[in-house]
Image (cartoon, rainbow, N blue to C red; front, side, top):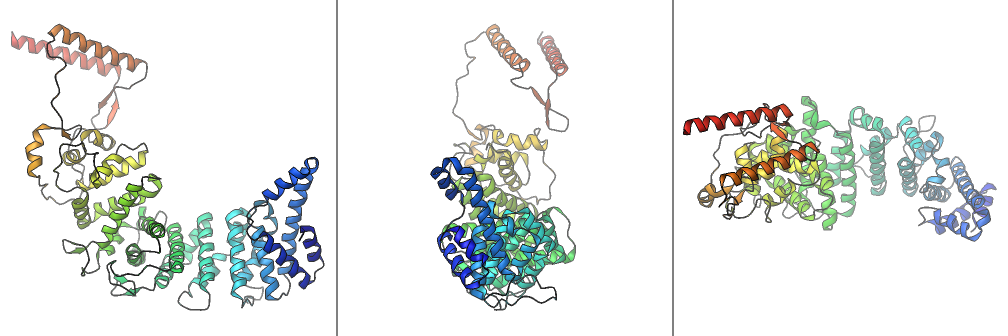
Length: 566
């Protein structure tokens, strides 16, 4: 049906005529996500009047949106409510047609049909049809995602409070699973795009506790103790757990994303005893998320990714609950501690390493989480070290060559991205208990130099840390090869001929001065910058007077040596 005919039927105000017209529009445009193609066709059909036609189409779409919103402010039968909301959902996909839906009044109207806003007398509108709720929520998601004006209106109307009230009913059956999913999707968009709403949910509405309960209910968890929780179809380990349903996975991921938004910055601030208990409870709920799988490898990977991102936001002191479950048959045990969750994090990291795409976005959260956990929890560090830095046997290949976890992480230490390079080096450094000599042993001085320079450890020594004094046991292969290992490359190098063999002292001096002059030219042309190690152990620029002093000291040492020989 032609758009102008639809508008004419809507303008009559007759509900039945409007219903037929809107149903025709919705059927035709149900899969349309932008009206640019229609505009392009009109430009090609009538080049001379293209601008007028485009403007006319845009105004017509906005007029249709205004009429649909106007109908929603009347008493309508559910089928007409649904048709109006479907039309608004289709129109709200296109930025150019958003105008009628972004005002405070429009957002309030849509919220009423979503069951989130009250009438003037404080009563919620009667919306027995869940399809009407869902369509209204979809409309709100579209306008909140695209329009800043709509987000401001949603914040003013305190939609997040209505959403929170409904999420508290997570264990009841008053609302359909689809309504719950779009409640969560709208909450995610509001917390992602509105800083004030994020703070309101986190603090005023106690969002962490609320959403922890919603996640608990979504997964149907069973509590065995204060911080030990399992899926209903399995024990504390991953074995025997059936995959999460599509509905459970989708809702759980929305909850994880909302929790990520409202816990940003938590790991960097001190928390009191009450907040610590809340975060420890959340960490206990997240453990089954790590141990669960969804339908399909990609979905499982996405689910675990959201879980890892959220774990990285929690205070480190609260992550010990990941190690609390009792060791059961099939669990991975180390030093009497259940390491199933740490092992899952390790496997997740290795899968991301092997994929090698979008390394910064996909790998850094897991690297940081493992690093900080290893720094704080002795058992975690020792377990990770057995998996990543086992006793060294291969001394013939460079540390970055090979397919072990150590090799893969050392390769990242020279990655083009500074954050990736730093995080991979930091994890290995912590696993070496921040011992410079041990770090160089496993990575080679060439790979280690970046982190050592940044920490002021180029002269060796050990960075202060809280680590036990266990011995670093060397293998027989390493002890035999140790005198022949090149510390820069971290491997035993083949004997190379001395390029100065057969040269006279004069020739050697000539070549040395030639090299000095080349470095001097590169320095004066600002191609390279000579550096030295300062008193704090960090690299600093080498000034001209430093070079002169070093030259004088060298000449003095040479003269003293000649006098001794004489």
